[in-house]
Length: 260
Image (cartoon, rainbow, N blue to C red; front, side, top):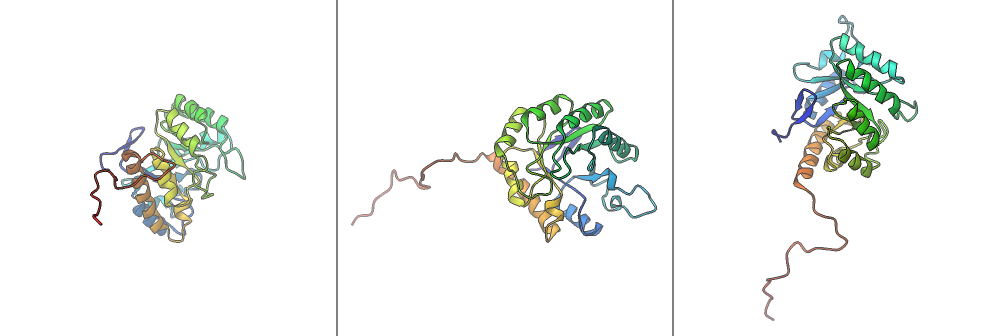
């Protein structure tokens, strides 16, 4: 797996699992889970980062020499708010990377793709490396690629729902449509969900709640690490064709029949 690199903008990642830093019981638990996940890239909500150096911050527990910080615009409901938040994160020294979120509905947290596309265009022009969180629409994914996004991050199901991939066909069509990495984001509940995403041909998986909300986040982080690796290997290996009827594991031709 060491030679199987995921390229996100200028960043070459050996791990195809990207994890969040929110919802943990404390910073120490978060730190242990990040280590167990094997992730190289971690998301940081710009609006939740305490930039006052005199106070304890999650950045005290995320070593920038070890992890690539991926600021996100979580909690933004307009294009202007998302663009402003991304610029604030860069000005604070976080990164010119941005996981771009523009939420369109407070209850479902589904993305406002029209505003997302406009924000992507503006931030790309401003020198950002944009990773947009979007729906599972292949048409919108292609528009985001054309706008300069370095990858697209379609939801598997609503954020934090734990429902896994609700529409496998759309994810597959989306993967076929674009020529940039596809990172399945939102809705993963357990290791099998992550493995399925990778088996479908996704280039990576991003998650937070599935790990942080588990009874044992550190163990779940390790499970997700292995699931992503297993799913990737299975995709590369190529699964057998599904058939309606049985197919014997041992061929019947050439067998020597017992003499009665």
